[in-house]
Amino acid sequence: MGRSNAPHPQPSQSPPDRLQHTGETNADRVMRFLATHPDQAFTQSGIRDATDVNAGSISVVLSRLEDRELVRHKGNYWALGEDDDIAAYTSMLESTRAANDRFGEEDMDEWLEYAVDDEDEDEDEATE
Image 1 (cartoon, rainbow, N blue to C red):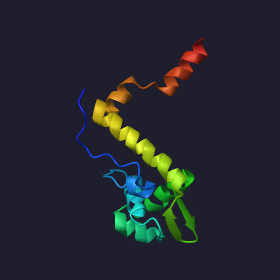
Image 2: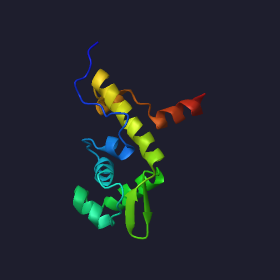
Image 3: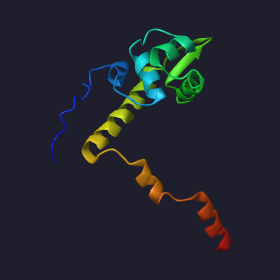
Image 4: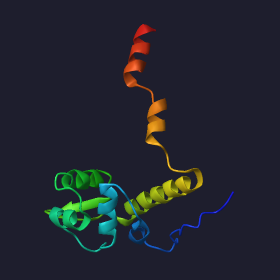
């Protein structure tokens, strides 16, 4: 069992510092941008321009992040959420990265191959 050569964040780093990583989703890009400016707030258009998130997606992304308490907003301005919430999020990201480093990334097609179809389950329950 080998160790990954990938750098791991130091425990002494603040949650916004630990959040900076290479992400692929719009939410990851927004969070990474806000983490680089933890004491500032931005308009949706400012975040959109800085992250290249599609204009039609930025509102939904920010709303979903707010629902998870990862960002907060007042008026037209959005900022990174509270440290405790960001710490929990970054811990989850770090755990996912560690699992991916050790076991490889998950294959969505493989997941779908074995996924249970809710309609099939409903039909099975109706025939019992």
